[in-house]
Length: 230
Image (cartoon, rainbow, N blue to C red; front, side, top):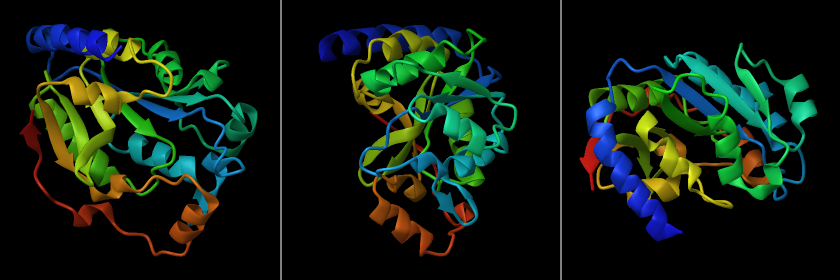
């Protein structure tokens, strides 16, 4: 599986150098289909500073400069749909959510209308990522649209990230609980955007309560420049 994914990523990397455009549309995918078993409840609706966790992600992306937005729901789809303001986003009800993160990605990709659109992949449980963080990620990708751009934190790279349209075949090769991070590991070059706010994803009620007890931290306090690394 890893060898096939690496070969696919290498092939599309070459294609991306010829097809990526800095003015290409950008579509955001918010993955919120999981059952949140470690949270023992509907994590996406857990309130933080007065609004649901997922709403923080939707609001930040809606104001960050994306051209379109899809929200992939699975478990608790009806409850989450009723509890959030989608801000005009496309809601994808993914019936096979139990197959894992890769299946949710495929469901989200099917909702992207433009074949040329770059893909910003975001997670529902990273509410600390603010508008400025997403804007820095988008600016870094538009400066080098033939490469993926990813948040860099805790000595790794991962979500949120942006991949050029040419990388869609590689995303479709992911299986099970493999997410975009697996693809990022196979790429020769990735523009890394320092983003401490992405280091926290909330999985348990204890982590949520710890976040609720903290004051909000403005994302604009971080101004590190993006770098390109193999």
